Length: 116
Image (cartoon, rainbow, N blue to C red; front, top):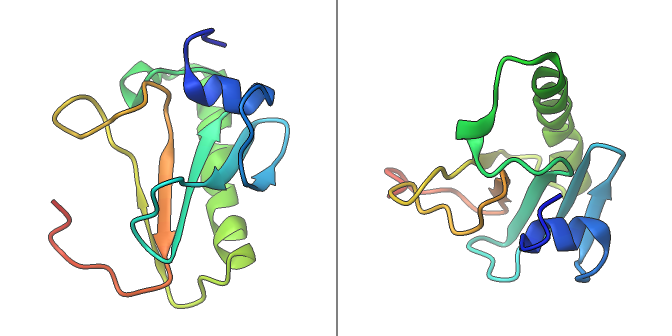
């Protein structure tokens, strides 16, 4: 846990959030500035600053495997039956604004392409 990380504070309950899903490994909550009718963030409870910090360790493999396996479950909970987009921004050029690994799950409308 990073004392200065806003997502770590949300995970710990220090900062409230509109939770959609939670288990021992991940937390999913609604984005405060949604870019689609459905826009939630899925964050691992373990603090990793970005995808760049993910290693081939068993811990990271199991954590990200678990997170990815829950994307479909969360999408179904949110009624995203016609598809969705999953995004992970990384670093400055990737427009990562919070230095805690997280995934945006967006849906509820047709997504445009290219995205950026």
